[in-house]
Image (tube, rainbow, N blue to C red; front, top):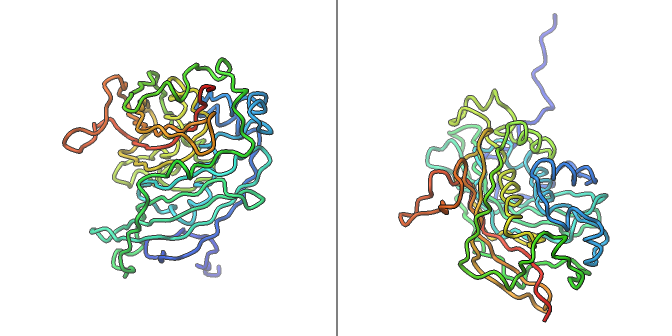
Length: 358
């Protein structure tokens, strides 16, 4: 028997030492969104926002039909980047300068590209942090999502030389004037009853806290399904065998899954926050696993009118998610700067919400 060839066309993904600041990456594989994606998003997370649920509701606001959930777009675009950016990730660490662009509808095809902004090797020399700016576009080249995220990535060889440290500066928040409002959006026909709440922009106060009350138990089958649905190939999420050799000893739930659960839970208290327009900052504070029950609460950080709009305003929200801990006691960050042990997600983001008629 002849000796087997060792050459392989399979790829192992990029390790930390493979990245260079300024590197441009075009990601495979374009993905055409369908009505099935909208239905599966509801099945996975239980989201109930009217604009994503009803074509008639969306048309009354001047849109051609119900757009896909903003976070479904988030998942797909991030999923495109995983094979090149975070296939060998230890953990996804944070987000900044996230802006949603034009709405995405069934039939739109999404693709993504990234630029490496920064690199920093960890002191253990076994891994490092990679900062990237990624942009998702539709088939017309229109931006649907643009963001910065940073990921801790394994090194292939701890002894490998790495480039000089570059830590990029990111804006602390997205300015309200830079939030993108969908073209043609008109809120004169906004139906509070159909949306599920009579509370509008004027009814919220800076500093107000909202306990979203309910919890959702995250099953292994749920986060495994979402990981596959969004073509996210990060090993830490789907490979139980490999997970046994990590410091956690098991698979990690995809962090975006927790964000979508928190968004779905926020319907109780923020039902008229019909569009996530931007994420200012975000941190996956602690890992989440199958069997954990996610609860959430929110705080109003800022209210902003939008240029040229009297029918629409923006709310800057802080969303805290905790596992196995109802949020009536507001678990968060203490005076010592440390998070409550149940906290898994801390997210700072902008919502668009209708205003009352003058």
